[in-house]
Image (cartoon, rainbow, N blue to C red; front, side, top):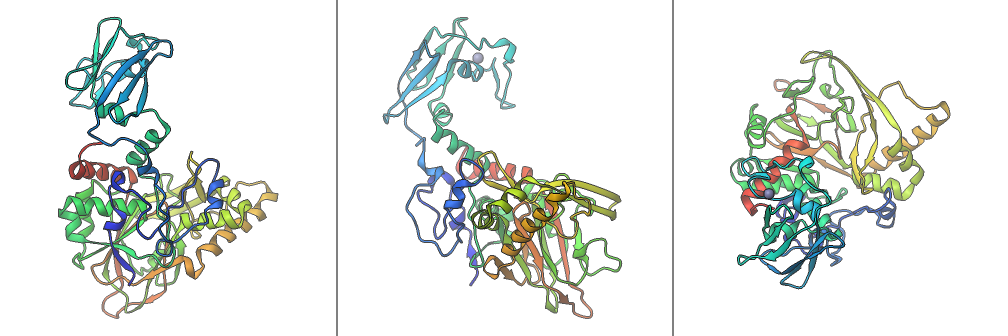
Length: 450
Ligand SMILES: [Zn+2]
């Protein structure tokens, strides 16, 4: 039993009140992963509930609570709003004037600001602040322009650290659930995600948080990825085309197009804009072998940080040259430089680039730094090859796997095809831009606007 339904990973952020069922977030804060060292990476299935509140549930705004009082703090140039449930929020005058929602200042049809910054007095005072009969906050500015702010709109934009963290999590869904070999692969029904918004939202939320979702029930024939494209937006065009076939080819222009073992890797680090998501649809399985393997690169990165901080520091700072040269959709000579492990401004691991096949022979490092780089890279590869970090599964005809190519390393074992039916997978990429956008659109349709 290694499949699981999506629901446990896909609860709406604001409704989740404790750490997700059966898993623990490994969440780095502050400097580059220092906190992570104190929280050794965990797996989805082996950790007990800890009962702590998650970032997304810890803070604000319960909806439906109105404004009790609003007043101007002229010296601080802040409007203080006191909420009916007792909390308070502070809003700078300049921000309020800049974000006036009236038709002169804001074009509702475009959901965009009309007011130009040169026309804003960023040192403005206020004439009158009051709560209206319908529980909105009304401000009259010195030039007698009036702004009226909806209570819930204001509350969601509260400047408290907790509220800001909640809003950023809602917008970008950066909370991740890390896993190891005990992962119960999140699974959804292909036809449901095509036709049911709730199922599609659960699919994309799990794809973001867990990094991989298996789709069952697609026909075992080409053309299914076009349906997912229509559902989500558009595929990412690359030099391998919009769609590509993974099969044993003569004179292969990629290691994937052989029948040999293909070690764990992320796809296409040689492309400056690495594909965010990979979609692989099994049309003809192998007669023997060809099992798929995946590893959570974020989990492995945190293990590296805990076990070998120096190696982690090297892999988060050295830019590695990747190259891909050949001809497919058209002739190409690609070069890009990538960190093996990328870290975001919050110190969280945010991306993995690792591909042994296309790692270039050019290495732009002082000569004395080459050996430490190899040692660091080898330490990371050793961790991801530990059996306890690898999830193995065999794709059947029609099965489709979707995964985060900026996080999950994938590979496959060598295989033998049926004599009359070569192993055949159809693949495509998408950008996270497109998928996160669709996720927000679906969330709005299922749960309402944020
Ligand atoms: Zn206005």
